[in-house]
Length: 420
Image (tube, rainbow, N blue to C red; front, side, top):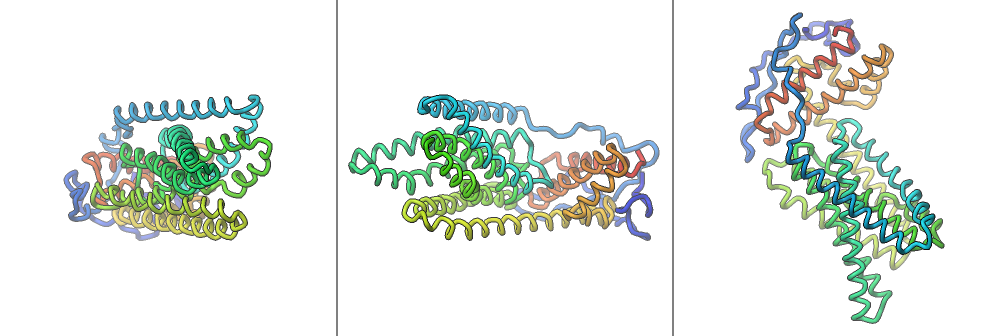
């Protein structure tokens, strides 16, 4: 199939649109040297696809995670689930009856749901794999919570025994121990996902998404602990933790996640070694400051919390805008080679355009609607793949992956234009 002609759809090429004659991308040029070097060549020109259909190489299967990654991910997820089960056992032992645990769990699901809705909004253009999101959640709810519970409790006991001051020991645990161990274990979860599935990271936004899921899991388990511990005041505690501050842990860990995500854009594959500690340091300092303010002057909660929250929201909106502009640049590379019309690039890189595209396709039936969704998803993945090549992190299979992505996009276009 050739590129759609004017009148075949709202995003067909403009009249007189000519495909650029760029050199064909070779496997050798698929990725720049990982330590630096020239940017990869532009994509090859859109080939003429006649009635025989796409070329033979398009039949290759989609890339999936390596076998060892699946094994490691499964093991870590199981360990996280066991950790969460251990937390629930501890909570059940401290409760007078299981109804307290049930109510606490139900209430803890409310702020978790709020966090996940925000995460899905941030990640709506280029979804992270569900398996890795589940691993991130279980890491936070299980591993991070268990380690933090043990370390913070031990710190409180040791300081109280040495100083004979339980209140002071609890303050030390809240301002010193908790920020360090909690941010360290949560940040480690993001780093594990990054090191094992590095190619799913394409910038700070991806790091924030995984950090939010890890922190959301941690806050979920911690809220259950607090709701059962202070069951007599459960309404007040729920309002404070579940309504007024569901994003505190998310915001702290987001600094670590953003730093790790930014390291993926660096030429050096070891950039996380200095980026991650910077983000972790910011997370620890902010966490300690927050706990200190709440412990010393609870009346300053809104005075400190609201401006801080607004600033973080602004940062995330700016990062998403930057990611969208980057996606536009990468798809423009393919537009110049004739793989996308300029109208398609505009549609794919704006929220209103994507919504308009989905509505237009939905009016043509469910098959066209699914094809449009796949077209939009495939374009986002193609832009991410191209960005990895530009950053010098393309794998040896880049050329084959690029071909598969382009064929998938072309086939989806055929379907929603009624040409399949």
